Amino acid sequence: MKRLDLTGQQFGRLVVQKYAGTNPRNGNSQWSCICTCGKQATVDAQQLRRGLTTSCGCVRRERSRARILEDSVMLEQMNARGLTEIMRAKTSINLRTNNRSGVPGVSWSKQAHRWVARMSVHGELVLNKTFATFADAVAARTAMERALIKDDLLAQRRPSRKNGRRLSKEE
Ligand SMILES: [Zn+2]
Image (cartoon, rainbow, N blue to C red):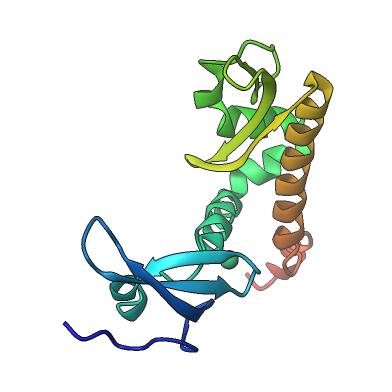
């Protein structure tokens, strides 16, 4: 089968840089792409041409965050109550099973002999790093929680409806 040269073409956020051999699993040709976010990704030609892959994965990550936003009731509660508590409840259920540190999302890796900070949002890992010290791991996890919450709150700043009641005079 003849290979189409996709070099220089753009698919969503991905710009094809060069041919990257065939995928050993399915024989499809693969292309090395650079994403607008700066990350590199190797993607099957078919995935690109059918529009199935349009980013290095950052689009999916952003969508995960967007899904949190849609949960507006949850967000109101987050504003009113402890933000971190609710984020934890929502995101780290699966992390608790192997957590030994007492801090959700932070655990000790026997293999690596390091502390691991993890965070997943709707099943997608947004943080997975190891640290020499427990404090660093906790700091990384906390920073990620804050970043997610901050993003959510910024994106939430739509035209305000605080004075909505005043508008319902018409009756
Ligand atoms: Zn990207």
